[in-house]
Length: 367
Image 1: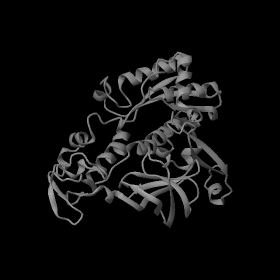
Image 2: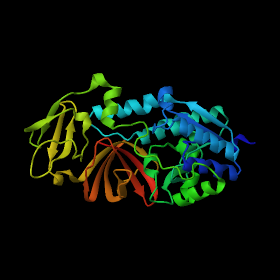
Image 3: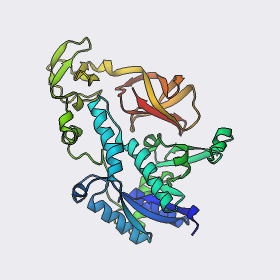
Image 4: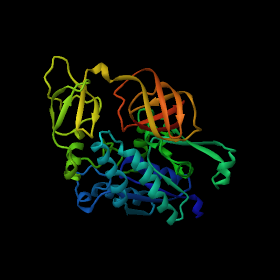
């Protein structure tokens, strides 16, 4: 079969990627199933692991591949995952920010390292079970053609099933990555994906969706402690917004903006985390109204559509409702965003993703 028709499908052992593989085979592609092993052997032997490489997940993916008649491999990318995802995750918490490891995993692992593996297998495309869609428009930009890229501008669109939409976590993909990405379940609703799997007799048809962060078992604080015990900040101070000490905490890495838990200060009105100074190991507390703002700054911006000023819709969390806002300034990869309505708990380290209708215009990381 023509290698231009060959596609590597990242199979997690869940229903979405399983149906994605079948849909691509039905469409006439030469499909190869791959499970990405992201963790060490001891973790992967743990049947209760929530990670992407548990024995059960690998067995499920292999069984699906056998059922639909495609070759299947397990690729050990644990070193890449540790460097690009785990280290980033731990560093962000220790630096007073709240990370989103799924976005970095997509950018560096699923659509980065795996794309290089696809080249080794003479595959033109990679595919996942994300609920999003890839579109393209004609692009006559001379610099694009000069670099040898296809004269199209690729973009991400929201999935048809907005209740499962995952376009937010794909904002970091490059034009090269997007031009070689297939997202077949983005055109379906979740209930229809499960119905297809059940009709095919795939044992994963009713498998629960994965929840939270795949490699964190018992809270991110415990994970950071076990991964970097010699870097923990230790006990520090709770302070109010004027800098007055209110009490003590066990480490600033245990907190995120908007948090109410772990605050032991007694007060008739509840305190919320309104800021974190990791260098001083202080956690700033304030009233709930202090969490609301019209403005934020976003850096390391990746533009999928052309850079722009003016009105967009913005998500500041994956399950956040898109909020109307204006991009009021662009300076290289840094932009200023002003929301039309107050937004709660704009959190440093989280992603801000800009939408033009159902298209992802771009996104970056909140400062």
